[in-house]
Length: 414
Ligand code: GLV
Ligand code: MN
Ligand code: MN
Image (cartoon, rainbow, N blue to C red; front, side):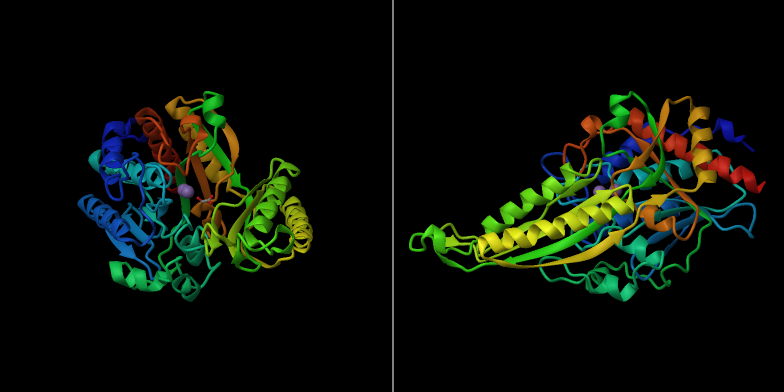
């Protein structure tokens, strides 16, 4: 039997997995386009399942496609300690967002298997379906179903911009499993992830000990004006939905600027009919508001709701706005945070506490099980970008701290 301090992950092996799976949806600019429940997602899921089975794990899939790979422990009476994140990416995503958390977990588990190390509790790796929310909104959809925030039916009904439903797509790729969402239990979850912001790099720290996730709200806005001829419609008589939207987007940006460290963003816009000599008649856009304090998030929402009607009146358009998703601010479990601290000092890395600006599956899982996260740096803090970059050493450091933290937690069950 190996003692836990001898367990050292293999950073090169982890790197090779990251680079190998980056081919599934790899883009010419070196990123990944692996939208959830697409053919590329099926390919990486099949690979992940096969790798877990090679390590002696049983792999189960629930009714919304979440994948659970389990290695038994010494004790049958304990729930597994889970490590989880997501294998789906943004349309112009990088190689590390989410993927590091799943493949880092795979490397941690592989190290245990290779060293013949038996944990007290079973160990589980989870791949959550549709963390990104870019193909089917909202984000963190199927960890949300697992946590009881959404029903499976709600998830199945979500449509992409081409009108395809998540439920039909899950059947198509063969990942609509038999297990009820939430029925495959675990006792705790650790999620390794890149920071997706610039703080660790700027402070030359290797590990972010994540204490929680800020609150997030998503909205959809449809602005209706009137299509008309650009040459023949005088400026004063137009109902230009795109002009109104441009002013609204500026006002939304101002909501962020006036509620720092809050952030306010419009990331998706569709202009109709999108013809160079038609005054735009209808525009659809999305809004993403975030702040660590729910009360200030309320104020941000109120500020946006004050600004938009004035702009609509000034520009002679009408609009509909609806909040489609709220993910409240989350605080992670102190006992697990303590394990991450122990795991970090055991590995000898510099660290700092931080809250997450990005949303993560861990935010929903924290509602049903003790949960926490580990961050590693990414170059320039750039993420949701094909140029996203984290080094072999940084990926390895994260996986090592993940392994150490899981084993520190497991030691409680001896
Ligand atoms: C998920 O990636 C989010 O933070 O939007
Ligand atoms: Mn992610
Ligand atoms: Mn992401």
